[in-house]
Amino acid sequence: MMALSSKIEWTDATWNPVRGCTKISPGCKHCYAETFAERFRGVKGHPYEQGFDLRLVPEKLSEPFQWNSPKLVFVNSMSDLFHTAIPDEYVEGVSQVMTIADWHTYQVLTKRSERLCGLLNGKLRFAADRENIWWGVSVEDRKHGLPRVAHLAQAASTG
Ligand code: SF4
Image 1 (cartoon, rainbow, N blue to C red):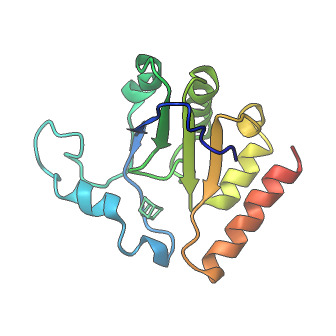
Image 2: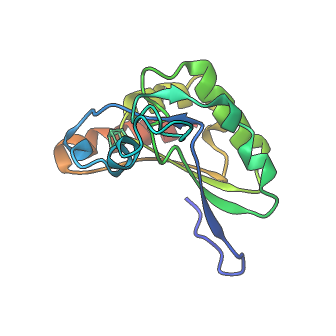
């Protein structure tokens, strides 16, 4: 992981080409994304009209291309990119955008580390070692966190 240079003026952005998720571990108990999304369930025309139900948002895929100046982009702050309900092809599409719109730095955090590891060693090989993409796992405690860190290390060591 690279340190952010103090010479660069960074602004933060969130990019959500997927909305919604389902819980997978105790760290999900107080999921802020769920609380936020559910507040708008049933609100006509709102991005979270369907609450926290998982859905793909393909019209958001090209969003990073519209940001001309470099941003630190939090990817899927309202979901988990490695959720099993998201097809490999879609995760590949998101990753292609990150490799092409490479003036941004992307931070991807997941609790689904096994799938992250599998894909980084497979279909996402092209994006695994990009300096502008930080692949990470969230660690809420030793029991759930350590296996995720091990998966991440496994993905990195084969690179
Ligand atoms: S994996 Fe993340 S986004 Fe999904 S329910 Fe858990 S805390 Fe929320």
